[in-house]
Image (cartoon, rainbow, N blue to C red; front, side, top):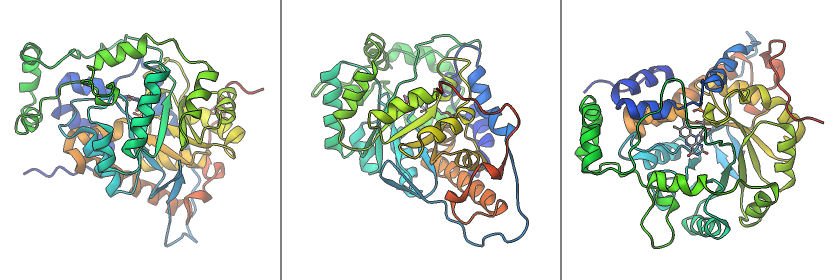
Length: 391
Ligand SMILES: Cc1cc2nc3c(=O)[nH]c(=O)nc-3n(C[C@H](O)[C@H](O)[C@H](O)COP(=O)(O)O)c2cc1C
């Protein structure tokens, strides 16, 4: 069998494109409108440089940290992604990989696997919710999460239901039945290894969302769940404070870009906030999170844990984010490509690439502990930093 190991995330991306049907690959790429935020999320990391040392480098380096009350072997968290059909084991494979590498698992509301299955694979699971379904329904979901052993909640607030992109949106069927299977069969047959991985398990992705099911009811379809969310009036800050009051454990708000919003998140008692633009899938033109991070970390970082989400593809990106004030980063597409290429082992491969990259940077920057990183370790070009919503 061919060696499935890959040496960088870019290689994994290229292999994923060849391995999965185009509609699945395009669903992972995502992006919104013109793709401005999607492109700038990554480009911004490239704009930052390092200020290395050449001697007095530490022989041993520690990158362990803590976020949301959980120990992390390195400052990386699996960001929740609702992409179905990438791999038959889906979120369970990702959760196992994260467990094996000492990391928490963010599980999307739109995931293909139940929270109970995922917690069994990774006891440090953080369940992601949207403001969807009404207060009673959200309380039911929190109760289910508590009973399942979920360790914390991620409330994602940055979504604008924009539904167009210049390079076209993939076809996502409402349901996997015989008709849609026939319609999609040319794509599936053009990727026989991917198709076979499902066929041999007799496990065709049914595109339902088990974590959005009412107690005792069948899981809604992806679009059924999306409709429930879409038709819900967006939350006020009081609504969010109410939701936070319903969960007595660690609580993260994901999608913050502005200092004033970060302060409100702190004031409502969140444990953590994620500086994020939904990986460029949201309001196109939102600046890359790495540029907005320092002002937010400076304003609230001593009172709420600040993490960075968006555009991370390398260990050096993780180091840049930590140097600019993040406690950790969250990753999305990087692990999805690993999953698409080689299931659980592919996700572990991605995590090992990030670990190796972080370690190499810490050596070059003469840091024995990840907490020693700071802005002085970076070359930050003029005009790079963006401060939104400061007094
Ligand atoms: C295909 C795809 C699906 C996503 N689904 C969700 C989701 O269900 N919930 C959520 O909070 N974020 C979702 N996100 C956003 C990710 O959690 C994360 O913010 C983003 O992927 C980070 O950017 P990166 O992919 O450059 O690492 C999704 C992202 C992608 C690419």
